[in-house]
Image 1 (cartoon, each protein chain N blue to C red):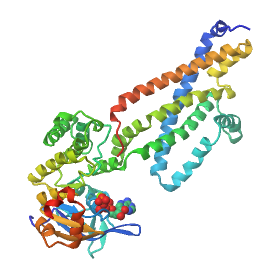
Image 2 (image 1 turned 90 degrees about the vertical axis):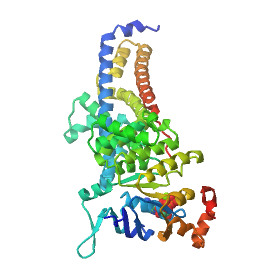
Image 3 (image 1 turned 180 degrees about the vertical axis):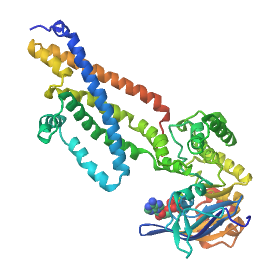
Image 4 (image 1 turned 120 degrees about the vertical axis):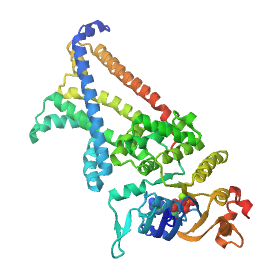
Length: 264
Length: 222
Ligand SMILES: Nc1ncnc2c1ncn2[C@@H]1O[C@H](COP(=O)(O)OP(=O)(O)OP(=O)(O)O)[C@@H](O)[C@H]1O
Ligand SMILES: [Mg+2]
């Protein structure tokens, strides 16, 4: 059991028309670990995350969540078969997603955003759902802002609400796609701190980030994506330690201000 | 010739009845048009390419011709294709279809204005299509399209005056008939203008009130 990775990706290919964006990705994300996905712009990081969240359907290859196939499974003779919707939902529900643009629903308060799916999808009573939502907001330090609408919150607060919204559904795995990239620099800290706390609770996390300092200190594993291929992976020491892969060297040079300076 | 407002006002009861008919046609035509327009927009958006193309033609036809011409053709041309309608029914039908064509375009613009990420977030937390429609798309779109919907609804009121050409006993027909009969054109059309303007202001005020209530949802689309 403990040997099954939380996320297991095999031979994942994603094409948009003629463009191959993911070119045969093999990746394991260990349970209870933080895996950080880094790489230059356009290398396919978001696409990989979106395939794992099943927001995109991969063109080929397989994804397993806690050992269970997501979306597609291998048939008796190895052929790729699409699973029925009823088999996709429960696997998907183990995964929570946090977006770069927060994507809070503007017509609902913070509490509404967090409790919505508990009521509509899980069928909880509004009152119970709101109590649960309140507890999640408390964890991200925003119980005092429960009745605020997204437009009344700072970017950092909005992102923390978005994290609470995902956590309220008790996912086994949390995906983060550049959660601090659209924040002013002075607001990134509060979101990264929430993520650090979450990592300490043993949550499995797959994080696309340009915050090299965060990746090096919190990540159990660093994965470097380049042109749709997984170029290097290993512990922060292995990936960032010298001698480095020349592409990583080059990449770090461009992220000096994101905490990479300490690694150079 | 003096400005004899009292003469026209002595027809108060008839004018009020006509006003009631105008308001009824306006409210019913706008309401039905809004709903029909919504379903047209949904069908065009989610029904695939053939449905979209099929619905595009009537929508463009309605938007591309004067309401006066449409209502004339519907009422006087209808019987040639076996569609003999009472004038008020024809008026309401014409108004509804006319409104639906415009409202459907406004709804469509509303759909397009919702950031895709808001729907992906709904998908990620497990909301299905109809739940996303009810809980996310509809309310969010409503606040986006409200100002243009109010605008269109004001235009709808003014279009009801066109129904006078098929003798629907609405405000313009009744008041202008009084004017013609007693040579009191200026007086009667002044009354007409004031009544329409009053209704438009009322509608505008209601719209602004709704907008204010929704304003805290306002968000900067990122
Ligand atoms: N829906 C789509 N249709 C066509 N091409 C797409 C689509 N989504 C992504 N791409 C392309 O796939 C490539 C990888 O995109 P992706 O967003 O995964 O990169 P990324 O590594 O997340 O980059 P960034 O750091 O800029 O976010 C890009 O070249 C992009 O243009
Ligand atoms: Mg990206």
